[in-house]
Length: 383
Image (cartoon, rainbow, N blue to C red; front, side):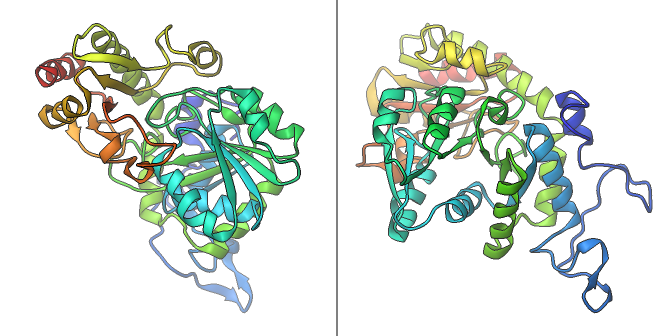
């Protein structure tokens, strides 16, 4: 089953999920095993010998991931950061250089600044919506990739994927796109020229806040094979039950994302008129600097909303502490609505750096509850 044969929702439901040939089960089994009996010495059955190297449940998820992103190879990892680390070590060497967003996710920033840098990898953070600054950051022959998030976490800035792909390939570098915020339902980076897509499958793909995982999807078989080798060698693989939960979540991704977007649009309209809010950050607003690019490369504008509190950091924290339906918690992309203060929560690792987020910023992961209930909760929290 390929993306050329069926629509997105059909692929999300069926790719990797053929009925079990032995029992007819329509849901892939959870192969909760560490090892496999071999038919003879050196003759593993269907290629399975050890679950770090291969597991049928994980393979089902990986097939689905490749299908819904329109890629050649999908790989499932223990977390999004495990996927990122594997990608960096597979593609880069000590002495290489990477261009990253000037407002990258805090965990990604920590990986580059506190881990990869010690390994000899250098990086430059620039606003990826400014192609002149991206070009100026390139070190010909040394820069191996542009690492993009679009929309970014938590400032929701938008980068032009096709333009970045052209620039990266001009210098024989890769374009990596973290597609976690948009999801493959709303945005298809590989079709726009990206070489690798990264996901925290914990978020919208899993969709139920009950599993941690990550993924890499490649545009070519060769790069996919290289990453698969490193996945096995480094070992940060997705377990069978985690893979099964994620695969189950993907089946409803399309219908969930439509509801996330519907609710987010209503909430953005409300916040944009509220006196306690000084600025709303959402690519769907025509006033957003990346709106035209987002409209070109996204189907809709997503379920993530950030805003700045008119009363500063103290008011932002107060709002986070006052909500009742919006749960004060890190992460995002689940069916339930979440609220957080990025400066003291998800992006604390960037404090004191050029990537520090504003102290008055509040981030919402808008869920699929009845939107009027969410609006009422925000009304009482904003005061």
